[in-house]
Image (cartoon, rainbow, N blue to C red):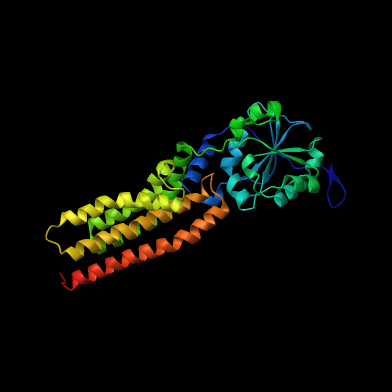
Length: 337
């Protein structure tokens, strides 16, 4: 029981939800996957009941991003319990934990805000495994009295987990399968589409169809081919994987430049080849580096190291390629060669 300011008693506010995913929910998931109005895809933070819970029912903690919340509740079919949705600004569990939004402080504050002590008689919370980087279990225990259990990586394994409260090795395994990687492509394309269209027009005006086609190929290689081929590109770093992929995609355009115009001056062929081999692989590498924020096997220190090591290289390569392009265009305009 909690009290209002006038000392009148009231019950903790508990919202209701269910395990059913409606057509409206699926439409929201689709919009989230393509990156449409990213900040819209969230539920109200707070405490939710699912099924017909009692004071002894389990409490599951998740982010208030709709895809995270819905993945959890849809896995709790025929399970009575509570869902505590933290205010993660509409960001998923893993990313918000890494950003210290799904945090010890937010969890403790939310426990107090919903008066969870008054709702359940036990003192155990079940958190997703991927939230561990943002939550210090011993601090939660010290500040709130609630013990933290880290459940399985995927919510779908919760029914089995609840039988013993012990996660198997399979449940603990973090995977980044082809399906997981394919899911990332639509939002990346959506976020880049307008810029891609504008720059493609610019490259077409500057160098014609072949140059603009090479540019589109370099960008799409980073957005589409990279997540698909990620495990098989031979390099430990995202940036160098991107360079390798970008170089492979650029090769057909280099060959087209070298053999496509037999009468063109040698210097002109070399300059155009330099554009494809420097500027475009650096673009693919830059886009590839962006996927470090989506994968499950990177670390903040590793990403930081990659950024400081390879971003300057990418900038010099892209700048050098653009310089070759400008010089080639100017010389052609003034009739050189």
